Image (cartoon, rainbow, N blue to C red; front, side):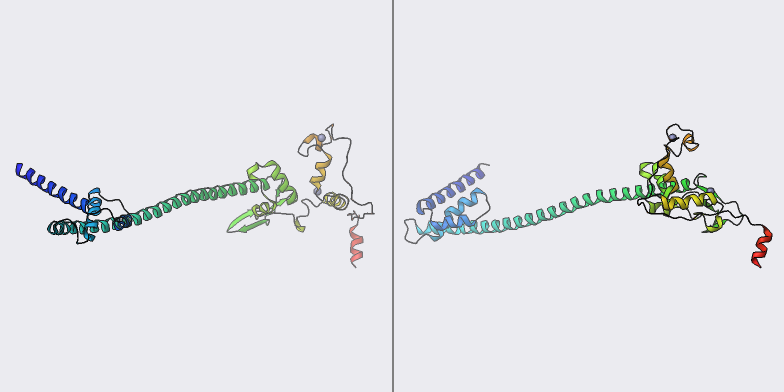
Length: 301
Ligand SMILES: [Zn+2]
Ligand SMILES: [Zn+2]
């Protein structure tokens, strides 16, 4: 122990002596300052100190007051230190570069993670809305089909031949009792808000076995009275929907009292908007002609 301590002491003293020599000999020169500035990164103090003293000693002119031997000794020692220092500096620069690149990588990854997080949220929400939309569309279709198949809106044809088959599904035909436009507006007023549909959608959801009355289904809604009245309405009223016209002259077309002319509010006054122009308006009407069978036969001949 003691020996070791002695050795340390000696080394310390030696070092101190060398430092003192160097300090005495060389005032800090411009060169050393420049070098200091070149060394960017902070370094261990010992190394810096060594450098401060070593650098000038290397450039020190021969004609100095220090003994040559001491100078040589110190320079050889400090050259080694300098080499070490240079090595450390390079290592430091290398490590710094690595650190920088690693940091860049981390930043890139973080950005990727952030992007993924945002996209994930979006995808989930998009999927949710898509599913909801699909569900609501199915509900809407169900409601429309149910609405159109109600007996107040369509009538099932009773004939055996009155069937349609689509996709191997056989259905008894139904004939609409009102125009699709009327039914559409009627549906929208009775349906829930989020089940409201556009006219186009309404037509699309209408099942294939529910159709408007054809010529051959004449007995449904184009009877003598209905057709005549419709022809008048078509020409005289601004609307060509009988249901709409009805709504303008009664309080409530779904109220039995109003429709039976028993309601006190809408019993007396029947007001409806006439034609826009005062010009003469003509319309066609069906007429009943009594024809006996024999006359008909003779007419044919
Ligand atoms: Zn009728
Ligand atoms: Zn009324």
